[in-house]
Structure formats: C-alpha cells, structure tokens
Image (cartoon, rainbow, N blue to C red; front, side, top):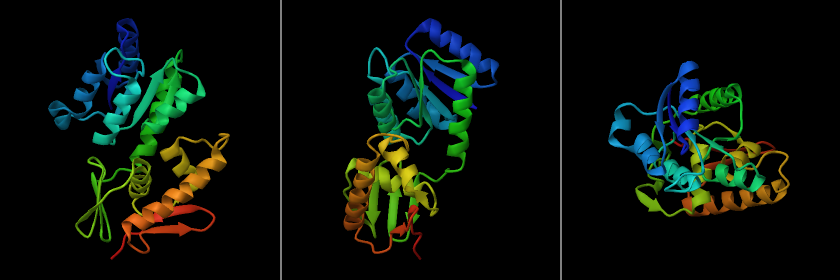
Amino acid sequence: MKVVLVEDSGPVRDALSAALRGAGYRVTPVGTGAAALEAVTGPDAAADPPDIVLLDLGLPDLDGVEVCRRLRTRSTVPIIAVTARGHQQARVLGLRSGADDYVVKPFAIDELTARMEAVLRRSAGHVVAPVVHAGPLRIDLSRRVVEVSGREVGLRRKEFDLLAALARRDGAVVSRADLLDDVWGLAPDDPGLDAGLHSLEVHVAALRSKLDTPGAVVTVRGVGYRLAAGD
C-alpha cells in the first residue's frame, strides 16, 4: 500500500515515515500542501497512485482543510486527517471537508495503522469508476459534474456530495446514519443529529427536484436511500 504522508514537521515526518515503512507501507513524505496536491493528483501519481493520504491540517503554505477540499474535488483517495486540533469543531470541519477519519496527536502508531486499515477496508467495498451511470444520470465524481440525458445540472456542494455518496454504493441502500456521517460529518451521538436529519431530508428533496428524474433517488422506508440504476 502506498501512503502519501503530509506533515510539516521534519522530525515528525521522518519518525512517522520510518514507523509506517516498518509496518509494511510504501511512504511518500511531503511537507507542504502544494506538494501534497502534486503527490496525489500530479502526473507522476497517475502512474503510481496512492492508496491513502495522511494529512496534517497545520501546513505552512495552505491550510490542511483547504488541501483536503481540493484533493476531494480531484480524487476519491481515502484521507485521514492527522493533527493536534482535537476540539470537536475542528474534527467536524475536517470531516466535512472530505476526510474519511480523524486522528489527534499524540497517538500510538498502532492506533494510526488500525484506523488506516479500517478506512482502506471501507473504501475497498466502494470502488467505482470515476464516472457513474444510473439510468439517464451521468455522475462524474472527480470533476463533480452531473448530467441528466446529456444536460448538465447545477448542484450545490452538499447536494452533489449526497448524490456522490449514493453513487459510490453502486445501487445499494445507504442508511441515514451513513449519509449523515459521510456528507455532514455527524456521528450517531452528535448533538446536532436532529438538525442533520432535517437537513438530509431537505437536500434529498432539492436533489430530486433538480434531477427531475422520477425514481432516481429511492426512499427505503425506515433505513435510508439508494440510487436507482434505471434501464
């Protein structure tokens, strides 16, 4: 497995690189946001793409949250935010920007590798082509473009993220809890869960209206939603 390790501190970067290599990972260590974008989405990455990114949020050139957002618009690679920002607001911001998990410094290397393995297991079950077709829908996950019968549909960020979360499951039912976690970064015990459920329903209604494709987003009563494959 290839890991892009984004860490601004040289000593920490060297220590983590050594520990990860000792655990059997191939490591590409970088120290800036610009280098991270190049390592994940640049020309060299096309031939040897990373399997996971460990992203420090405190970087010297770009804020790590912004780096995460940019990576997520260009790639579906799993991202774990690794940072000293341990308060809940920072954790939620990191998850909402596209991170798949969040590890707070200091941490044990065993905890980090266990989280990496869990994220990789989840992502392995959701491997899809960069472009997903579902009936008349064409969803370009990397370019964040949606077309219905060849006509481009303008979606707001959360609306696209919701549609992408359904598209990545290849027609399987996605629970409301998983959607709230994936799109809103809300855990089951989060105090904002009720507001999140209301927001989910509002965004599903808006998405259906904009897609104007009856039956595209199917409600599975008592569970969640799925994206219909169509004919």
